[in-house]
Image (cartoon, rainbow, N blue to C red; front, side, top):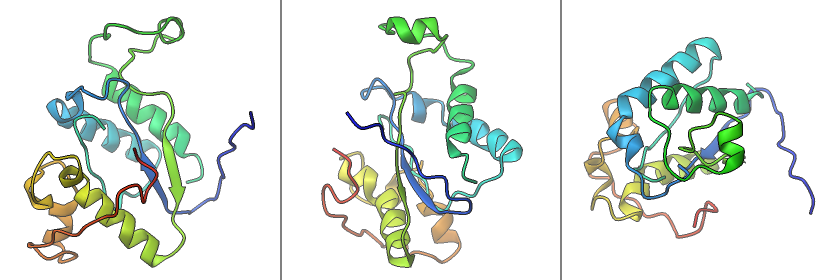
Length: 165
């Protein structure tokens, strides 16, 4: 099996998908303020920009460090979960997150727009709301305030376009 080597391109725009180990957990939306604090603290120590973001209840070139810190800061005050693997126990992990994440380096403005809209529409795609603006944990609200999206926007993203199952 060939090992995947992540590209390290300083200043690149990158799209990420992260997931909890328990895909049925709602801990991210239940403790969204903890997640916001973890992102803010990590961004203060390791600067980066977030162009779009959506938090679902399941779902610099050194971004691996940033994600590790966000995950650790979010998890710090939570109880360890049941069913942790021996390797997670030995590493002191709480078993909340999947170890890996998926990333895609943005190629151009059209690719960026498609990924931003993917973030907006994802709660609709997963059946959590009928309109993107009805999901409170999305950057669509900030983007609407800045005039980047019309309030009635309800775009459609083709299934499987971004490698998500």
